[in-house]
Length: 277
Picture (cartoon, helix red, strand yellow):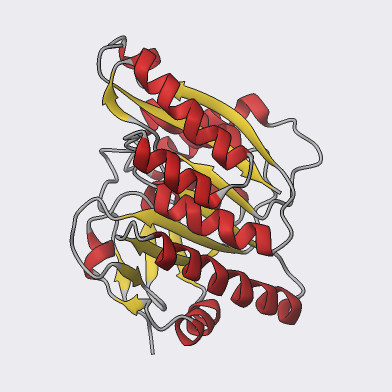
C-alpha cells in the first residue's frame, strides 16, 4: 500500500519552489562551512525555520558541520494551533521540490508503542512550516533520508521530559538493531518581535541553558524571562533525549537576528544554530 503524500505548504514563499533554485540556495547557505572535516556525528541539533533569506545562513552553518544519517527525528512547535498536542505522521511521505522524503515508519511505530500520548495526526502537520524548511538541507546531504516528524503543541515540562526519555529509549534500541545513528533535530527560532538589543540579551540566556545541556533550566528561563523561543519545547525534548543517549557537550555554531538582513533593528527574530554531541 502506498503511503499518503504530504505536499509542501511553504515552497515558493519560505524557500524557492523550483528544484534548481532551491539546490543552489541550500548550497550557497552551506558553503561557508563546507570544508569542515570530519563532519560531526552529532546526537542532536537546534536549527531555525524562518524564510531562508533570514535564517538560511544559520541553518546551513549547522547542517554543513554535521554527518547526516539516514534517519532523523525532527521536532517542531505548532504554529497553526491545529491538531493534537503531540502529533506524528508515522507513515506519510513528504514531498519537497528536491523529491520525496520517506517516513521512518519503524522508528515511529516503536515510539507510538513506547509513548502512547503521541498521536497519529495530519492536521497539526498539514500547514506547519517548521519541519518542512529543514528538509532540503537534509536532503542535499543525505539522499536516503527518512524522517520521524513530530509537532509539539504543549509547554508542560513533565510531558516534554517524558517524551524525551521515551525518544532516547527508542533511538538507543533502534541504533543497536540497525547499527546506524539517528539525529534529533529541534526546529526553533529564538526570541520574536522585540528590539535587537533586548532579543540578544534574552537569547543569550536561553542559549546558555542549551549549551549547559540543561533542559529544565531552559524551561525555567524561557518561562520566567518571557523569551518567545517558539521551539523551546522541541529543544527540551531533544536535550532530554540527547543526555540520556550520552551527549556531553553543546556548541553554538552561529547566531544572527533578522535585523542583520532586513535592517530593522526595532523588531527582530533571533536565530541560533547549535550542535549537541
